[in-house]
Amino acid sequence: MKIAMIGTGYVGLVSGVCFSDFGHTVVCVDKDPRKIEMLERGEVPIYEPGLDALMAKNVDAGRLSFTLDLPAAIEGAEAVFIAVGTPTRRGDGHADLTYVMAAAEEIAKAAKDYVVIVTKSTVPVGTNRKVRDVVAAANPGLDFDVASNPEFLREGAAIDDFMKPDRVVVGVENDRAAKVMSEIYRPLYLRDFPIVTTDLESAEMIKYAANAFLATKITFINEIAALCEKVGADVKQVSKGMGMDNRIGNKFLHAGPGYGGSCFPKDTKALARIGQEHASPMHITEAVIAVNEDTKRRMIGKLQDLCDGKFNGKTVCVLGVTFKPNTDDMRDAPSLTIVPALVGGGAKVKVCDPQGQHEGEGLLPGVQWHDDPYDAAKGADLLVLLTEWNEFRALDLNRIAQGMSRAVMADLRNIYNANVARDAGFVAYEGVGRIGYV
Image 1 (cartoon, rainbow, N blue to C red):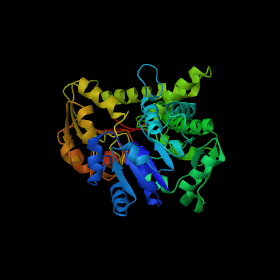
Image 2 (image 1 turned 90 degrees about the vertical axis):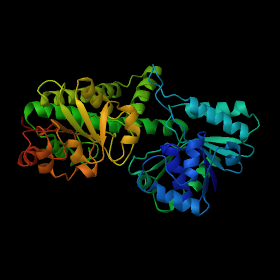
Image 3 (image 1 turned 180 degrees about the horizontal axis):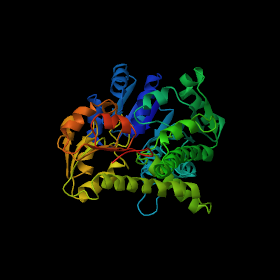
Image 4 (image 1 turned 30 degrees about the vertical axis):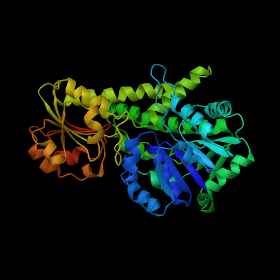
């Protein structure tokens, strides 16, 4: 099949590359000439393990190409995917659908033959029907269908998630569109991966409901972690005991400095807004949003306590600033709350992150960037483990401690523990929801 992918951001590029690896002919479209030039040179504008090699393989095979020319891209395409950004709209928390609707109108004006217009972007319930209205108004004679096909890709593991999904969700209005979507995902169907076919609204809601629930699990265990610190319990043991219950499961029960990234912050806010608009308040989701912000602020208080009540005059080494490992994504990362508090409090902040500097330089002014964690920790009064990159899981803590001005660790991902830190020579250690020492 021929597929056009509108948007070469995280979702669009990963999806386009993976569809081409299924054997489809895929043309990825973007309005940014610099991005298209990069892609045509074989350069990937985002960091995602394995994406560069898979992209090169399918470009070489002639199945994958990139262009600025949308009309040429969709000529002869049986499906056109919209994978543009839906950022949180300022002021009201709703998803901004400007780019989605602009893409829909542009597709409508360029299309000549029957096509399924598929929304891959995360959009509020009812959006696909609005897309239908926009397309029909822009080109009344066009024969088309709309479909909702939300993505469930984890940054850092996106290719595996696409190729071996828990499920594929497809929302359609009729059998004709369902047949096209089934053909697109036929390689997964043949390997018995579940394809869930629903109506448009249910597909849209599944995405928001899933992300809000996962954000709730993270926020719940972070709130439990705060209580564990008060009563002397160990949140890692609590999480393990909870996760063994099959009704709960062990995923997303890792205490830390709060969730971030491209999905959870945006989607929880959008779901809360959808509930308000339909007079059906999402009380749990609204509480999750509030508690997540409280969690980030609680981390700042934890660091301040380890700095004798003030950051002024202290040197702080921060290991990891991306919202999670194996990505360069800084969107809504806890570091964007925590690091500015350190800098604003008068601390000298030294940062090391395997992939975070490119984006982080513009988002975290006033910090020093280092390629080596040992170099970054030299002379520091506080070591903060903020993102659990593999590079930080097996540090020579003795070497780190010996190089610091004052060997104090704030392990906000619970990578290590108090005994390990004490044996390495740290005079103080704090985790999240665990017993530390000062």
